[in-house]
Length: 162
Image (tube, rainbow, N blue to C red; front, side, top):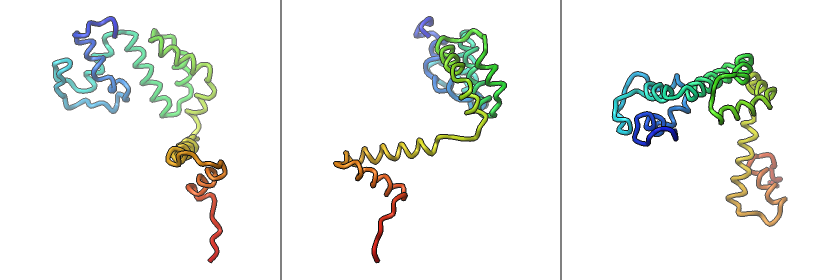
């Protein structure tokens, strides 16, 4: 990005539609072109991304690696993931740093892709606890906070005498 002039077409193709580079390529619009005043042309989303990644081989390799990685995680293909993590292509420094982190935690990454388990329930429960703490503005007693959390999750039933 820093090598291009700010008024150049390559810079505008990389700068303005930055969210398109984060999407899966299959989800991009390929049929209906739209006029964009940033690069003064009528392009589809797929054409804009293709022209943008063709500005640099490093960017193209990084983008293709990211797309392959997303697809391998979705399909649960651990052999493909392992080969992508050990990839020797010329990629950007941040992507290289990410791949080194994945190499360091290789077994966890492969297990996360292969197994159907998720920590979504735990994350949702943690979010609910934080929301209770935020709206309560602090309880004077920790047991009151725990009681409130249990009440919200219906884990604690009050004994009501009828």
